[in-house]
Image 1 (cartoon, rainbow, N blue to C red):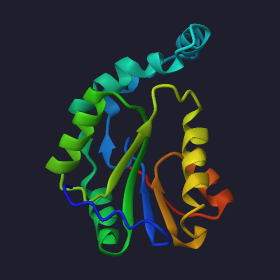
Image 2 (image 1 turned 180 degrees about the vertical axis):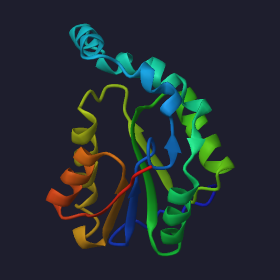
Image 3 (image 1 turned 120 degrees about the vertical axis):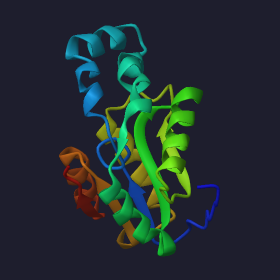
Length: 166
């Protein structure tokens, strides 16, 4: 977005999922790693490697304009965080930033999975929410996600959640 309003302390905060919420990648679902692939890479100590092919095709994703329009409406009074379990690489970040800019997504920061973070996506997002609630009141956090497991976790934490369908 180019504009960084990182005044996150005790302000309204929108936590936006990326895949399935802001962008649709049905064309790459066949690249989701199997349990065997994940286990293989876990045994090698690099489970995130199982996701490289899937994440590598994200440049061809399409925007979910309706969801983007809804998210952008919150921008004027929410610090907006794009939270993705996509593993950080320079290339992945570049693709995401270009897409968000091209699709006019208003956001303040992107939080991606650290390459050494091998938590399940729900656990990775839960860790972020736990950290966020140390500086933002839980009743000031709104999450927007397409994953039922993530939405259930957000709700258990007391986060108001918009479940996205497409």
